[in-house]
Each structure stands twice: as C-alpha cells, then as structure tokens.
Length: 379
Image (cartoon, rainbow, N blue to C red; front, side, top):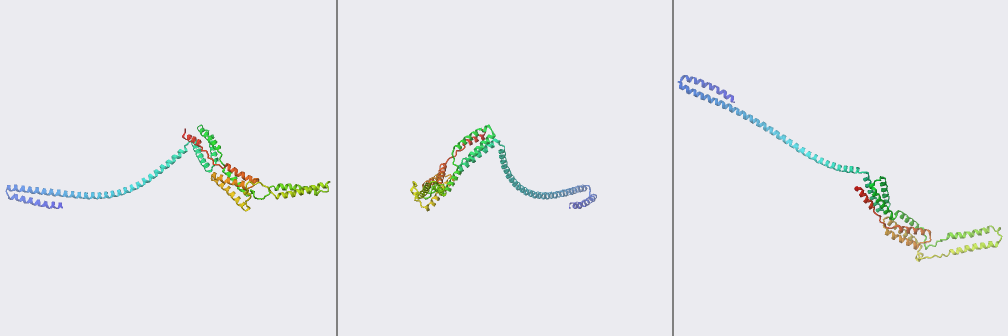
C-alpha cells in the first residue's frame, strides 16, 4: 500500500515542475524566486511526506514483527507451560514412587539391621572360647537338673549332672576352673549326705504289700497252721505199723509188735482229738468277732489304705502317706495272724515304707553356681 502511494506522488511532482518552468517563462525574476522557494517547499514537503510514509511503513512492519514475535513467544510460553505442567505431574508421580521406594528401603534397612544384630550375636557366641562354652553348658545342665530334682523329689538327676560336670572339667584341665571343681566336690558331698527316699522302690514295696493282702490269714479263721507237722508225725507210726504187719514172720516177739501197733493207733487218736481244740492267745478280742462276710471288706479297705499311701508318695505328700501307712499297719496287727510268714512279710514292707517316706529338702548347689559365675566373669 505504501509503494502505491509513492508511485502516485511521483507524477504529481513532475507535473508541478513542468508548471514551474512555464511560470518562470512568463513571470519576472521575483516571481521566479518565489516560485522556486515554493517548489522547494513543496519538494521538501513531498520528501517529508515520503519519509513519513517510509517511517510509518517501517513502524508498521516493526509492529507486525513485534506482534508476530509476541504471538510466537506467547505460543512458546504456552507450550512451555504445558510442558512444565506435564513435567510437574511426572515429578509428582516420581516423588510418590520415590517415597514408596524410600519407605520400602527403610523397612529393608531395619530388617537388615535386625539380621545384622542377630548375626553379630551368633558370631559372638561362636567366637567364645572353649572354656566359656563349657562353663555355660555346665551351668545350664546344673540348673535343669536342680529343677528335675525338685519336681521328682530325687537327688539322682543332680548327682548325675554334678558327676558329669566334674568329669568334663577334669578332661579340660584348666587351672582357672579348679575352683569350680572344688565347689562341685563340696556340693556332691552335701547331696550324698542327704538321705532322699527312692520313690520307685517304695512304690514297688507297696505294690507287693497290696498283692499279699489277699493271702494274709485272719485271726478269726479256723485254719490249721500245724497241719504239716501233724501229717509228718502221723506218717511215721503208720509206716512202723505197716512194717510190723508186713513182716510178722520175722518178728520174734509178737508182744512187742502188738505194743507198737497199739501205740501207733493211740497216737493217731490223740492227734485227731487234739486237732479238735485249738488254744490261741488273742490280744484284741474284736478280731475274733469279725464275721466271715466282713473279711472281704476288711481286705479291700486295707488295699485302699495302701493304694492311697502309694498315690500320696507319688504326689510327694508324705504326711498323708504316713497316716495311711500307720492305719494299714494297725489293721494288719489287729486282724491278721502275725505268726504267719506272709503277715510278717507284709508288715515288714509297710514298716520299711513308713520309715523311708520322709520329706527331705535337697541342698542347692550354690557353691558350684557361684564358682561358675566367677569363672564366667573371668575373675
């Protein structure tokens, strides 16, 4: 548009110049001067107008360029903003993933720390010296044996562990463990000096006594205790008489043979008559008044007493066991024949159990434990 205006202005300038030349020819010199100044002014105005048009065109072009630059920059800025938003979103997602990974890593680090602690403990326990392991094993064994002895009421577990510990220390033969061996020897003497009841043997004795209850003869029964002696005494005269009868031809004195036969017959009659009457000393008359049908309940009651004593021994209730054993002993002495061998055997078994069933406190191996603690501390 600016180029078209300039092209239109150039013919006009040419026409004005032609008109001035013609005017110069017509008017005087003064007029020519005025006309030249006028032409110059017009030319100057035209130049200024042309310059203004050029400046305006350049300004318009610059404005267009600036607008285009602004639009381009705005578009670039918008793209950068969108890109920045996308990057921010990606950064946010990345930060979330990083936080999750960090939490997972922290958990794994904590787990590794725990495993490291366990591994250090394991390495420390493995790096102990042989003497330290021996001291720890001996102490643990003694404490377990002490618990077993307290539960069972027997000193055998504690004795066995103390002997085993002494043998192990003797094989090691370390001078700093000699104090432990001396303490073990003292505790062994203390434990051996205590007479602890052997519950197993006492239970076996009570079982044997219970088995003998059904075979014990009662004072109220009419059993012939001297039957064997009577049969022996009777057999001899019969044999003599048979011999006398079998060989009458060889006897020279028939009177003597007759006297021997008569004596054997009279002896047999006397023994039969004697067996009809039995004289027995009874210290407790109520034992003879016991009815035959009550003998079964008496024996069962005695068995129950002995079984109750057995249970009391197994449960370490020695006072209850003593009470039941005393009652069983009184029943045996009162209602059963004490001259019989089985009665004496059952009574002896009950007395032995009653004598050994006593509450005994086992000594604690304090000297050994103190010596082990000193050795473990390295002093």
